[in-house]
Length: 374
Ligand code: ADP
Ligand code: MG
Image (cartoon, rainbow, N blue to C red; front, side, top):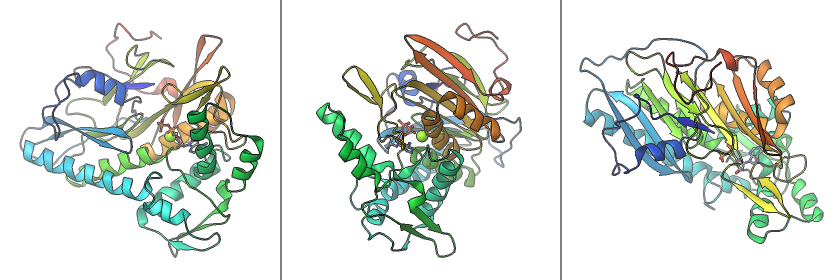
């Protein structure tokens, strides 16, 4: 798990749209289950002449808490920007929700198989990025897993695994190649009946990226937006090389930061089974489904990805969880500007598997007590 560290960079989020939580640090640690990082170093500048102050805001959406922190010249500017960023997230939630029967996504799924359906630019964009992740991961990441996810939810309720016949029936409506995108006409065609798309593995990263864009458009570049385990990171805080983000060991919910990264202009995501799983006959099934089996993953694995943006890292973290450490690391090493840390737990023993570029990610120069020494 990744945490935004309660370092000197984090203590006083001085303004909020909602009352500041009493245990802000705990909220940060729990809600930012991922950390962001960047592979490059860089600088940034704003056009404001007033000295910049740090502001933080939070907003519930997509079943989680979105947090943003950024530097702005005044509280009025900061509040207006945060409102605009959160409004963008709410718009995306309305489009992409699979809980709301009348979301654009669910309306698309309700159309007859084989019919090209015109969709919004946002839905097309996120589906295009999802298809890219499916291609890269050889189908390990697959937003058509909705029917399998539905079975997983029933299993969680009833405490029994789906029957093979149920899996076989669901499989008819699963497969990323059953989604056809036409960029020229901006249409989506679902090729099989009863398909049900599930953007749970990419939507939070996408929304964080889009919210960061809203802040940037207002000149607030020194910013980050976090949605649980997915963080979109902009330019560094003034006078800093990056945002400090901590990665926690597998199974850790709030503390025990294993290492800290210093990131900017990047995305970082962590996927794992720490919070969401169902246990049946002593076996733990994660909410991440293997499209090949139709069942939740049973290996204990936590994947942190650092990459160019949070849409990419969110989808890759889910996909690499399915691929497992060997194929997952091979994929990450083949991609530019991307790094991963895979943590596994077998027979009570935790092991870490960094990708080739992970060790090169910038770290704060100060060595902290809780940090692993290298
Ligand atoms: P979280 O949302 O808990 O941070 P992930 O980003 O890994 O974790 O997304 C998990 C969600 O993605 C699941 O709850 C489900 O909605 C969806 N999902 C499950 N398996 C897959 C898969 N193989 N490919 C794409 N999405 C998936
Ligand atoms: Mg994901």
